[in-house]
Length: 135
Ligand code: HEC
Image 1 (cartoon, rainbow, N blue to C red):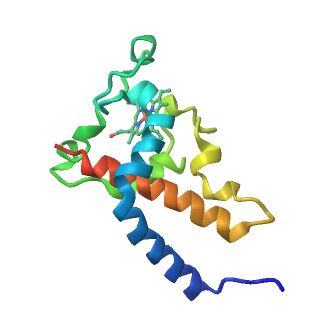
Image 2: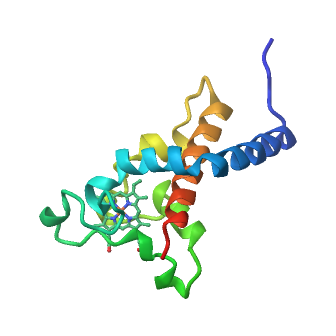
Image 3: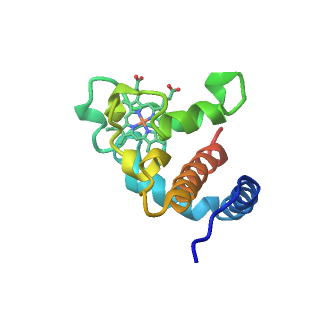
């Protein structure tokens, strides 16, 4: 039997996922950060990763995103940067370095909803982790 998720079911899944994600933001988000971002933005998230010296444009301090935005963490902007909807040249756009990990559009045809939910969950975990580090 083929199981199809209706829009309401999908919304409920995303809500459940969001609360599960916020409970674990420290672990999953941190792991994703270390795997995909730390090389440039630094293990301490302040912009001094191993590749920082090799880049023409400095990888910015991601703990000051709220400060740079009048004290409000720019949640949507950061989500769009991570999932590739907003291009950052240093991230390899138009083909982001981490597109396969965070772009929902790359969900497999065999698992359309699962792929989207997994990709969104990862983006959310990572963004909540970054938000928790704002100073
Ligand atoms: C190859 C190095 C590199 C990697 C890997 C990388 N970044 Fe960046 N990132 C940069 C650089 C350099 C900039 C600054 C670009 C600019 O100013 O045009 C930047 C900019 C940003 C910005 C924009 C901030 C702003 O206010 O404009 C965000 C948010 C960001 N990165 C988050 C991330 C996240 C999250 C990851 C991991 C998923 C990541 N970056 C991985 C190099 C990198």
